[in-house]
Image (cartoon, rainbow, N blue to C red; front, side, top):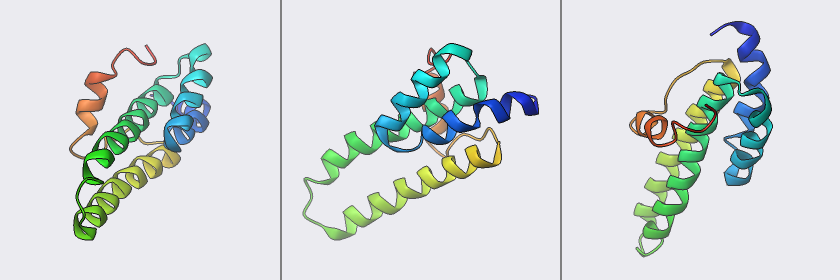
Length: 110
């Protein structure tokens, strides 16, 4: 991927990691130009947001601060990894779940 594509897609790629609303806004921004760099990070950000909401529901059923803190720290690290990757202009899947998100959301940004 060339530097022009990356620089044009950086803004929606960064916005994609800012909550579920950010992912939807980035998806709308990217719907016109279909930037592959932005689409990659939108898939990652959307997957992380949905994972956070679904797993967060189940984790909240436990009454244990240890489980809750492990969840927050683990998912927070994945969000930071993806955000830093988008800021630096890299295409790196988030560990463990990244390939799954790319497969599930393959039609987004295509």
